[in-house]
Length: 182
Image 1 (spheres, rainbow, N blue to C red):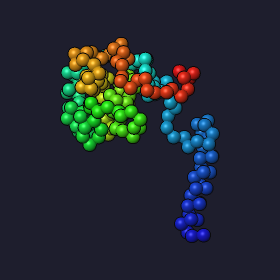
Image 2: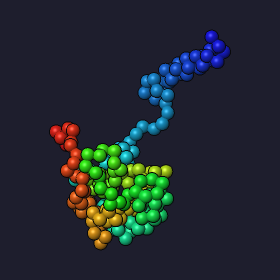
Image 3: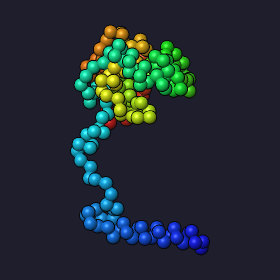
C-alpha cells in the first residue's frame, strides 16, 4: 500500500472516530456543526407562489417601473429591453410552432401561468446574485415583461389580485401528471 493511501485511510478512520465520539450536542454521530434551523429560517425560504396567486407578496408593479429595473438589473444578460443578449430573450413575438418541442421556448409562447414569472424572477434573478431583487423590483420587472410581450396593457398594474388573472397563451397545452395532488 502506498504511503498516500495509508495516510488517507488513517485520516478517514480517525475523522470517523472523532465524529462518532462527538455526542456533546445530543445529536449522536454528527460533527456538531451549524445551528438548529428555526421556523423563521424556514419561512425565509418558503416563498413558492402558486398558480392562483397564493403567497404573492404585498405590493404592485408597472411597466413604467419595470423599464428602470430591466435596464439596470436585467439588460446585462437579457439585452436592451429584454429582447435578447448573452441569455434568452424575455420579450419576443416568436410563436411556438405546433409539434416542435425543441423550438425556442419563451415566457410568452410556453409558460402556462403568469404567477410562475414572479416566482422564478424572485428566486433566481439576477443569476449571479439570486434573491437580491426587492419585491418591488420583481413586481415592476414582471409587469414590464408581461406588457412588453403584449400580454397586458402598458398601463396595467400587476399585484396579487391582477397577476393570477393574466391568461398566458399556452396555458391549455399542459397535462398535469398527478391532478389529484393539487
